[in-house]
Length: 207
Image 1 (cartoon, rainbow, N blue to C red):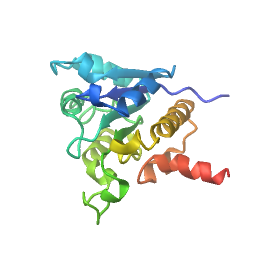
Image 2 (image 1 turned 180 degrees about the horizontal axis):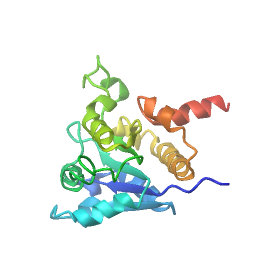
Image 3 (image 1 turned 90 degrees about the vertical axis):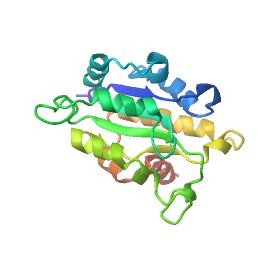
């Protein structure tokens, strides 16, 4: 019997989309997947008045949750924090009776202006991307979701001129397809520093 198709929810947050060179294209690519629901949070909530009931229902309706955003000051853009503060309520996402998200898969797809070496213990930023996103990882732990390593494009400021964006989008498409088909090794994907490595290793092994 074929595996059940997983429904994916992409929550996109970019406060200045006119300047986006990567995230906007990743969002557009995700819109082309039939198994993916895409939400542009800044467009839907320009005054930050988030509809909690609607957002909670969206979470209930999907198996995989993805935050898509550019890294801003080592964290998410403001509206994603607002979304977390309001939507992940006690009694829904955690606490007594708060089991609505238990068993769902969750990760961040993000871009960083600095290169990968800058995001190391001995690098300019002193912490890895995964370490910087630990508050989100712990949110996933508290709510019972399976947290995967972040999907990251480093040196995003130079990605366009270096021709790295098409390959990154192709990998993101492959990731979405694997998640929907439930063929991604989630335990392995959770153990990696960045989720991209799951596909890099797979490519190397097939050559």
